[in-house]
Image (cartoon, rainbow, N blue to C red; front, side, top):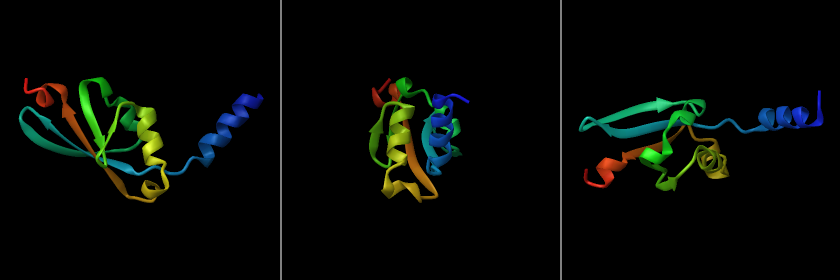
Length: 92
């Protein structure tokens, strides 16, 4: 096992458990809510929606992880995520 591999395994195993995400959005003019595990959040297309997490704008998965890893959010059951599609935000 290389030093880099060992470091990666240690960092993953010591990473705090991140909360689930309670996502709300508009789809076909209907309000929709659903839950995602953090791993599933990698599929959020950050460039096609304004992503607000607990009121903070997030522009990448890495930023989402940083925000959720903060002490104040770590032990929460879920974080509130609002996805506002760009065409809705722009009035299109």
